[in-house]
Image (tube, rainbow, N blue to C red; front, top):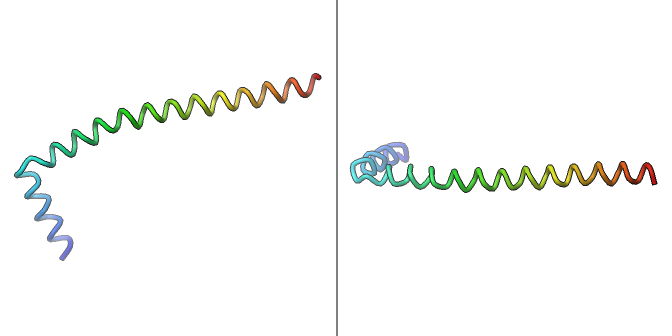
Length: 61
């Protein structure tokens, strides 16, 4: 029953044009996700480098 409802709803959305709007919304969100991913990777790299610098300094001092 739910499959029939989702298929009917999907067809209605395509006819009304809301499926295209949803696809565009997801595409615009992808840019924000990519930006957050780059920020996270930068912070992880910074943490990793800081960790190794502290370990090397601790070993020599």
